Length: 420
Image (tube, rainbow, N blue to C red; front, top):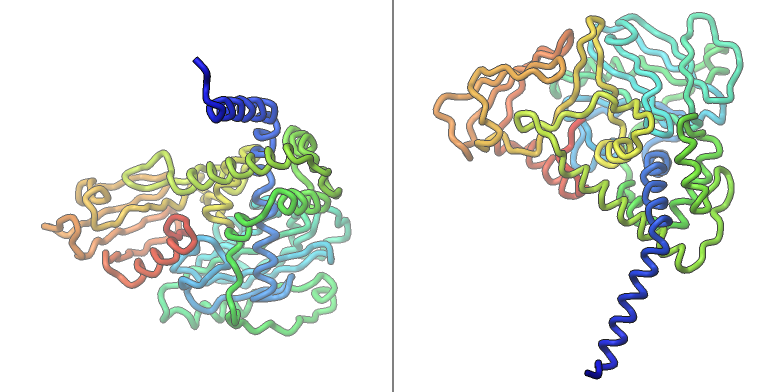
């Protein structure tokens, strides 16, 4: 039987595709793994660039005076009961001195390096409630630390100060604003001279720039790996990252050097590897595998990832700036669970009334209104008793304006509901 020419051509094309994929399988895999490895570092620079273009200059403390709304872009998944204090540091210009006042109010001032690892966390849980002076220095600085200051060493040139101050509603703004005004960030030279630079006034950007996550998705292979190679020069990888650097080298990416010229087929293979990695990261960010009573509970190594590059990349995509799981002096830890389930649904309310659910040191005491039913807009009261800290009660309304705004934001960002 004589085959039709178009069938022969189709079979030859299919065989050719199989041969090409087999020949480039290693390149595709190495490109995918390299994309995942470098994703947090590139995203950090993109986010820093967007922030410094619209909010404040590098090395300048930026105090957010109001709760985040749907246009808030400084944090991927912000809290809605927190006022933020933010600064992007470029430590190539020398160390910075950060000062905090004495206060009984709960706060966390965390510092992330360029790889999104938390290298320092300041607050009553870790450093006490008194005043403090901290010197933030880059990897190459070897000067003298001023008397009374604590050295915080950043492993990278890029560092991000992401501060959160507990705020008990709009009526509490005045107290928190006063506390923010007593936070200080200045150069070591200004600190030693007793000088304080004039504060930078905050104002909304006239035109919002494209969100950093969208910028990441639009990068081609040359742009992405070129940025990664440049950033690796002064944001050094950890000592344990040797195998990851070898995979980067196999696709022509070396720290501080231009990306090697790729042939047509290699470029397509690397692009495909990036696409596969990005898709898998997106699915992992949107679909947590393990739920506890309807809650997604983050692992305890968030903020200190080691060689878990996949987790590090997914957390950067879903919630850049995720804080370390807090640990009290008694050794009890707390984490920040999140849920994608509406509190008015039966799935969310499956547990018995007044049942206590322990989640790594946190206890969520459920008190449901008698006679409540799925889909109703009745109130659900949850008393959160976090060891040694929060003792507040929160009310959630199924049809609240807050939930509507947060859902709109999550849909716009193509991510899950924002949590801090």
